[in-house]
Image (cartoon, rainbow, N blue to C red; front, side):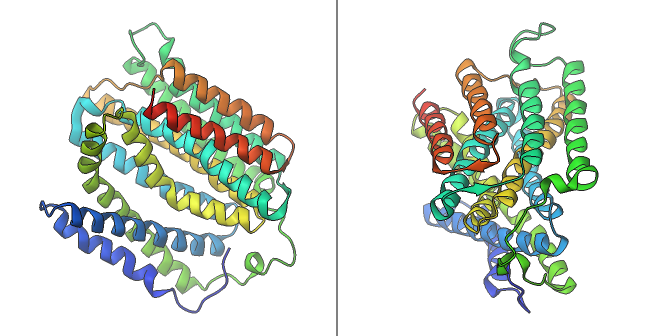
Length: 361
């Protein structure tokens, strides 16, 4: 994914260190200027995380590389949601639903749309392996409907929630589906997810980094992810206040959290698409969506069952329509193994509708 370098760029080491140093002053009320510095530290840590994840991914190869980044990004999301739930109590029981739904919409329409549009604009038409993508979409669709739609139609308890027994069962189902997907992706049918790269692509076929550089990047990736989690948590109260003052719905907080968390993977996916590696790009995007919902729901289910809080999972009618529309369009647009700017435009239009109807319901 990247050319071999004898050493890591200095900024990829300085950025997460600066982020951790900025956290020292986050506990004090230092005003709006310091909040901007925290945002800068957050963005720097995100960009550094992308670089280190790509170094590790290039070393371990596909599809393990994209799996590494997907799991790393999901660890951020789970840690952030759980920490905010524990800090906010029952008032945040809908945060997991809003964030997971936002992650699916951002990935399935925003990131995939940008990747298809950016790649096709540069290469006119791109191809990818149909078997791997269809496997990802089928698994993602099943988990999404079982966790975000079905709670509205069960009758053991009233409202868009599962009973304790149902929630525990669905959490296990999510882990079974995601675990099986990882087994298929990395062992049983690994070839479904391998990119068919051009033989003259120097960036793809460059020698992988040394073990020393890869291990260093792996350690720095954890440092970056930790900085992203803690900086996001420090900025959360300011974010919630800004959303409330603007009169926007609380679900916008979930969208912003998901966007920040998915930024490393989104940037990596767009870079792969522009380099005519659409298979890698889709592996990153869909794998991230699967890890996001397949691991986040069980994690928040444990918090809910442990604390006794009611976890609100069911989407409203508008969100359900947009979710189902997204899966129908994704199945059609990614159902031929070839994409053009048309598919990318359709996905981005749906994403724009989702954002607009969230702010102006």
